[in-house]
Length: 481
Image (cartoon, rainbow, N blue to C red):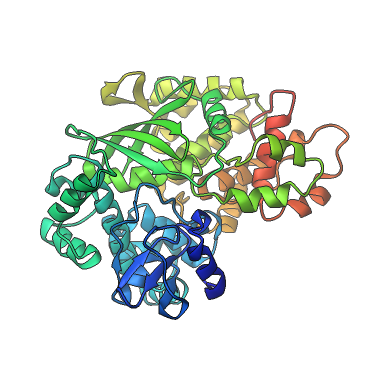
């Protein structure tokens, strides 16, 4: 990932928050790296060095600044838009794959050898997979130390460390302080309010790159919410999560520059994975300035962009759920698709061990639908057969659905199943992988508009976001894919 040193230095000189999460500034004279907007980030040009990731800075011996607040810096939009090997691998690292499966598991998921993967990540991001995962764990650990009352051992395992000793060693190396010293310094500084915690419950702030159309994403998710699996109320959204080590629930409330997130986890090791998936669901790391600049150049979209700056494309917390809901909704209105998903969930969904308010049920697994879907699913036989066939492929591992899948490979694979159309495959790729340049289906274009393919060339590489504007401004109830 190339960095223009002059542009980066100018961004740091004016504390430009738009560059937070995209790069880090390291100062040779102090041995510290910062976010570009950090109050302590000022440095003379000759003593400044820029890196694409914090892991790259750590590899060169720099330690993290203690004035940069980890709960106010959003992630890089690179990992939402890049479909290359580095982008796909980084999404999986953020999802916690290295903690669960190691580098061999990461390499298998992206389809390359460990050696080639390490070589590409080092060249592109300045660090190999283990160093990138270590930096991610350290970032999450500091956030938990400074903003929650979790014990040190709970923080260690929630952040993905294999042992408390490994956790202590990493924190000392990255921050030049012990966990206790970080917590004490945060309390003295008065910049943090630690949230009381109970076993399995954690409350965090998820930073967002503004402007952020929170109302739009809440409306999109709320209109499709499945009772028991999701709950939507004015200004907030809740849902159940199927995570690697057990079920969880999440309650989300947008609040300006961040989203308040209250999690109840069966296993604290799933915390990082839950946060990564919820950030993708709300598209918190998008680059609204770049998106709005391109779309506003279209006279037909300009009024919508002006009225709704920072529009987002809803993501996914579970690949199986996204595919199933897309298949259930083919050629149906949103209310009809929601009703079909509700019937399926009530029949073969899994009950939570302990309900959390309105949240009682996990969305059905692919195996359950493949086995019992014929008893529950209604509609044309071709669609029912397609759903069961796709679910059987997911359950057997033949069809992989995770954020490290190659976008074009997933699109082609989905289209190989009878009954799965191009629009449905594109919709899945857009939501599951965060693909920003999916041309919206023709049925969302207002009557009398120009040919969509021709008009859409000017929207690239943000055609998915253009589609959200068109969906939002359409006067009728738009079918699901």
